[in-house]
Amino acid sequence: MKVLKGQVAAEVLLTLKRGESVLLSLGIPVVALVVFSKVHVLSTGSGRSVDFLVPGIISLAIMSSALVNLAIATGFERYYSILKRLGFTPLGRTRLVLSKIITLFVLELIQVVTLVVVALAIGWHLNYKSAHGSPGPLVVDLVVVTLAVLVSTAAFASLALFISGTMSAFFILGFANVLWFVLLLLSGILYPLSKLPHALGVVVRLLPSTALGQILRHYLDYPHLRHLSPVEPWTVLIFWSILGIYLASRYFRWDS
Image 1 (cartoon, rainbow, N blue to C red):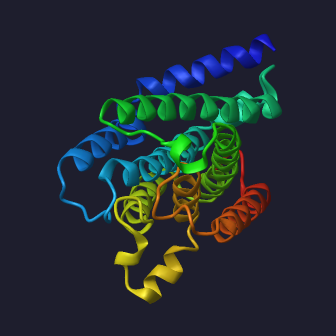
Image 2: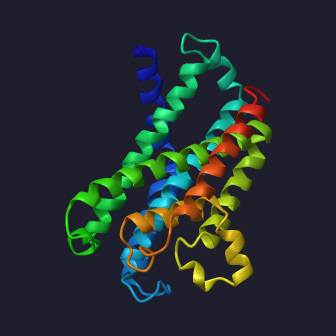
Image 3: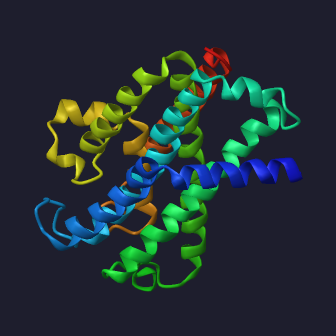
C-alpha cells in the first residue's frame, strides 16, 4: 500500500508540474467558462450562458485529462521504456495501472471542484427546489452524475491506452491535441447540437464527449434538456466504455 501511495503522489505531482497538462485540463476550461459566460459571443439558446456551459466545460475537462493527457503521458513513458522498467519494480504492473487510475480520479476531482467553484462565483446555481419541489432528487441526480463521470473516464482512459499502446509517442502528441480540438468543436460543448446540420448532428451524438455532455446537462438541470431522455447518451457512453476496454486490453503493449 505504501508503494502504491508513493506512486500516486509522484504521478499527481508530475502531472501538476507539466504546464501543458495543467493548461489543457484546467486552464483552458476555466478561461472558456468565464469568458463565454460573460462575453456573449456564443449562441447557447434562450437560457443563461453559464447554465448551458457548465456541464459541457466539465465534460471538456474530463476528456482533457482522461483522453489527451493520459494518452500523451503514457505514450512517452512507453517510448522511453519507463513503463517496462516500472513493471519490474516492487510496484508491479497491476499497482502501476491502479496508480494511474487513482491519479486520474484525483485530478478529475480537482478539475470538477475548481470548475464548480468558479461557476458558482460567476452566477451558476442549480434551482433544484423549484425544479423538483424537494431536495431529495438532488442527491439522486448527483449520484448519477458521478456514475456518468466514472463511465466516461473508463471510456476515455481506455481509448487513451489504446492510442498510447499502438502509436508512436511523437505522433500521439499531435494526434491527441487535434482530436481534442475536433471534439471540442463538434461535441456540443460550446453550443447546442441543434446548431449543427442534421446529418452531422446524428454522427456527433455518437461521440462519447457528446454523450457525457448531454447526461450532465440533463441531470444538472439545464431547463432545455431536462425533458429529453438520457437513454441514448447512456447507451453511447457504455458502448464506448466496452469498446475502449476491449481495444486497450487487446492491443496495449508495455514497450515500443
